[in-house]
Amino acid sequence: SAVISQKPSRDICQRGTSLTIQCQVDSQVTMMFWYRQQPGQSLTLIATANQGSEATYESGFVIDKFPISRPNLTFSTLTVSNMSPEDSSIYLCSVEERGWEGYTFGSGTRLTVV
Amino acid sequence: DAKTTQPNSMESNEEEPVHLPCNHSTISGTDYIHWYRQLPSQGPEYVIHGLTSNVNNRMASLAIAEDRKSSTLILHRATLRDAAVYYCILNNAGGTSYGKLTFGQGTILTVHP
Image 1 (cartoon, chains in turn brown, cyan):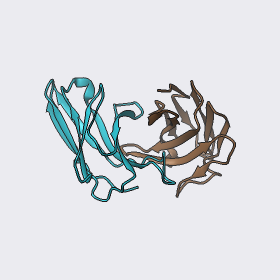
Image 2 (spheres, rainbow over the protein chains, first blue to last red; image 1 turned 120 degrees about the vertical axis):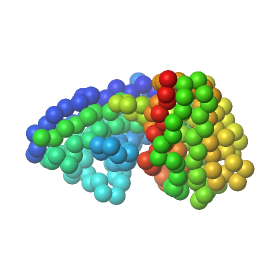
Image 3 (spheres, rainbow over the protein chains, first blue to last red; image 1 turned 60 degrees about the horizontal axis):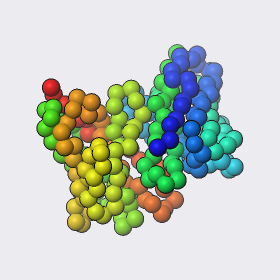
Image 4 (cartoon, helix red, strand yellow; image 1 turned 180 degrees about the horizontal axis):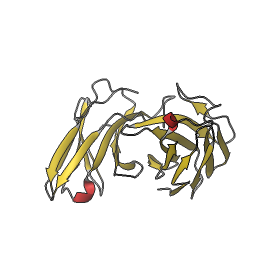
């Protein structure tokens, strides 16, 4: 399966600022997904990012708050904008690979907003 | 996606088999049954998946009921490294929700030495 590198692994940010999280995959993938895991909770899908098209956001998530880029088949970024303490979570990217019917996850970015 | 129901927690002793149940009574014909686990401070890890027949891989076995309304993940010999949250997820292979995994609360597995 693919290997995913997520950066940064963790960060502490001031409220009102923005953080961009990078997801790099070691192979070309069609579909990439961004998830959020709030403290003590399960994962919730934020959006689906396909190369060459606008990201598709799930209910409760908007592009102005979580802009996503997908410039090529191995890379994507998620920006958490105008952060508040409620944005403190782990953010994870995931990929679906051709010929591999499971989904691979990155190790996540642990974000704390103070 | 159809909903799954899992026990909140289970316990096992090291080197004993573990059977993790999952109910999915509203499963549709094109829903695959996926199992993932999340070890502490890590992203979820794929364990196994199946559609109708029982499946085996190096990590585990998946037993699917004949009516597909329930399934069981089997760890043949639990180790301390298997302590994790286990998620049973239905994923529709042909629908618009393909790839969009809906995580429930999962089952917290504790393995005792």
